[in-house]
Image (cartoon, rainbow, N blue to C red; front, top):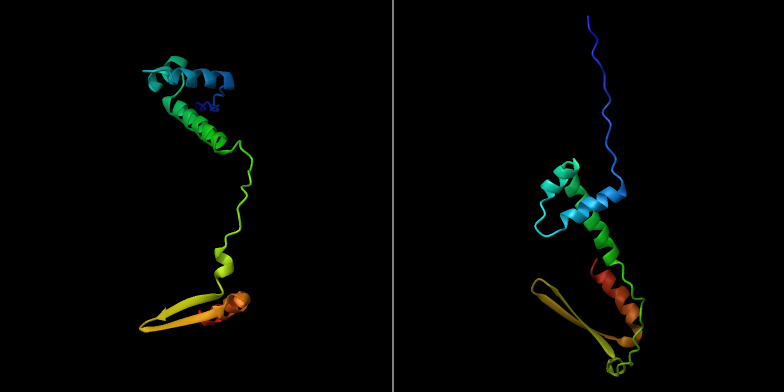
Length: 118
């Protein structure tokens, strides 16, 4: 009887320099990804995967803003001092209720409104 010969499948590893070279060749005008991959003995699907990962890395680096936060001074609006009361209109079906609440006790109004809307 003959015994089967067991072989282990090893994955090829490509260096960063080779990947960069292949990706650069793919970026040339009129270049075919399949042709570039065949010229280097690499599967075209693998080259597509490398291109997607490179594009994703580039998008991530472009998303990080280089500008720090710049505060913009705003002048206080005179409108806030003119408002003296809150007006709330509640509708449930055909019934409408309008409530006026003093602005000085807005926190109590919020608590009341929470209870009403339960």
